[in-house]
Image (cartoon, rainbow, N blue to C red; front, side, top):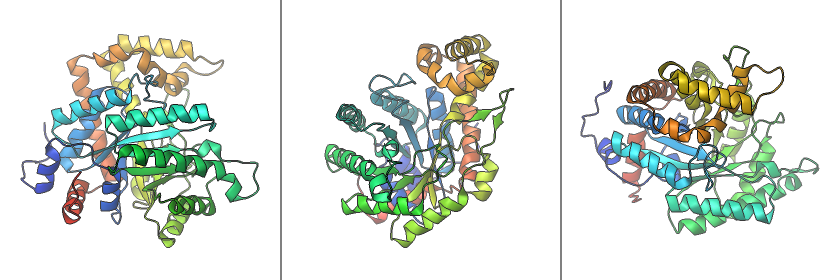
Length: 393
């Protein structure tokens, strides 16, 4: 049942209801630069039905969303989801056609460089090529692992981080051939205990700007971490460690230096939505990544609608990744993502009733996230900006 009336002939709705290529992320961020909202970025690892549920919620509430997968999730050799860049794009396109909503940015999340060797960089360039050819409209270069903790000053600490980030963004620009796209960088490795400093963030942005690279989003180490923690019964332990004070400090410093860059907040799955609604600075944080949440949603429904398949996946994960004195449910929660590729065919062929349930629950949860993120008819704001600036994409 449709909960919202979308029969209006409002131009922005008409615009995004009709087939078009993914919205360039920089257009979205420019249009929403002064709005007090966090843009939802969804990592839909499991089934097309999560994407359909998200897009239905976006259409009914007139929102733009970001659909993304990281290099670890999706790669030319299928990552741990069983998806390549092209098959992920095909999946998103099928969902958009079914729902009738093209208000989305296609983001290549966490294109990660861990060692910076030429062999690794060549593989990364091949992965970037695959994403460009598939039609991605936003790219995140993550070279945070190259931060030199032995160096005594910020310049030397970030030397390799900057060199590699610049090299890869210049490569993307060349490969995009004049097409617009969003740029996200990472100056602090997500999950480490040391928080990114304002000095590090500003130095990083200034050196990129000197090379003609202005970031739309900056990921920082602010106390978040990927995934979730659960107790012995499998209940998610709320993540309350995100340092809002440091996040705001860096955001204010960026603004004072003339940067329009916002903070890309990773590791939100474990953060209660009511705390995001009440505590997170919306606008300074302009992108919120949610990935594990949707996977756990599918597992929860699988337990009820197809307990036999759930047990098969659960048993495989807990046997493959078992650790002494660790409850099986914790092992499953932490490592179940690696079962997605192994059971790809089974997850692609779920029965209709379960698929409908996934869409319905995803729809409801997405509406709550829109509210928590402060998103209000972002599609209209983006459309108005496109018309005002006479943008043709």
